[in-house]
Image (cartoon, rainbow, N blue to C red; front, side):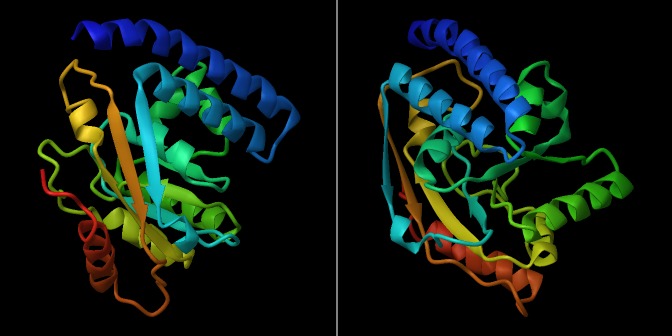
Length: 231
């Protein structure tokens, strides 16, 4: 617990500094690259301070061109940092709209080209889903956790349909990934932090054209589960 509290003394101001840099950089760069570069610096520094290593395999399966949707399991708070470091291409996050209201941090997310998803009611959710699909189809690669939240025991949670509705609307391939080791480093709802290694494995892209939503969900789930380590 003490280690986690000491880490927060570094992480909070460091996150604020990187967010400010992203906001300023975004004033001169509308492509999102400046914001993404700041996010990469944020991830490297934060992981280094926490003494967390990231190991990646399957990068050769990730398409080098064209938009894709990365989908994978969600084990812990450090998943976002690890993925920001592991994915070799420019990408955005699809995140709940509430995060974009956080001072400075929310502005940095917008400058980086991240996509808000409003889930407050059905009409707003559909509108934001359509807007997100249009941005993805226009060339933005994104990351989504189809479970919607972090797992408590490492097992896959039920997948939410929204991620797959978005994939079908956007019409771009899904690249599954599997995260292992994150939960042991920082368990959900516990103020604990342990040094360790997060392992990220990418699987072959899954085309969405002509595939029913339920079948698409099962294909992605199977690909993620195939590389999930039993704890």
